[in-house]
Picture (cartoon, rainbow, N blue to C red):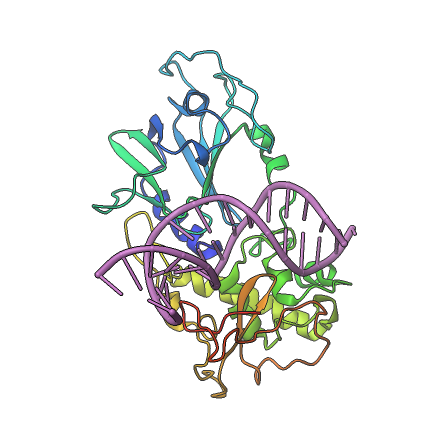
Length: 328
DNA sequence: AGTGGCTCCTGGCGGC
DNA sequence: TGCCGCCAGGAGCCAC
């Protein structure tokens, strides 16, 4: 699952080759990937030069420069967009344009799709000849074309960037204050902290020695300090290992990350804790599989009231695809 | 306002 | 062997 470290890995890889290239065409093979019609999308970005690549949470932002004299003639644009933040492509102008991509579950931005791979949902053709394919088996990923002036509104609901100065211990404590939601659900909420997903939430809570079922508001100052450090350390470790290739994540060059090789709890149900040897347990919190060590992450401090407990559903305990019991 | 649950989507897996 | 149903998960939406 692409989370902050995976998207950052993609960004860094693309940064070595995309800036300076000019968008020659955008081919949309799956119209559901974008809220605007392919023609509007194309009209807004073709002829623009890639001037930068940024990341906001799990979103990848491709900065495009203003259209120049070489920009192709455009048909009338500005078709009203469906409900949602992204407006339709605007007319050629002296301002830039943003292409925003979210990989969601299985999205991959790659230069050369493997033979036999499903058709790319969209392809950005660049000048000089380069093609960036968006492959996405589960088709959850999305693409937006934004006017720079709409960027703030687009990301308005998103919490602070973990590596920004805004995300300090006081910020984390303020965000947790009074919240009855389990810590795990809190960490997954992009309105609180941007970029943390299921893998890194489990790993950060293990590193902080905090039980994922604890109500976020029950975390004390010393624990908040541990959690803050654990979030940053876990995400940084993910970046250093170029992401986790647990399901389908590969970077644009087709390389896999290696963070999955040092996971402490995620998808290690029933395996011994690397610290104390206790079997790792799995529960469902906020609809997400959650893994923790019951000894290193004790349940003191108050359990959130509405967590569904794990229970085998059949006589022998039904198992899911990863060998963990399913939930009630 | 805060929270949980449903929905989308598809490959992989277990059960029959 | 083949079919069926469940499960995984990010984020938007809705109900409570």
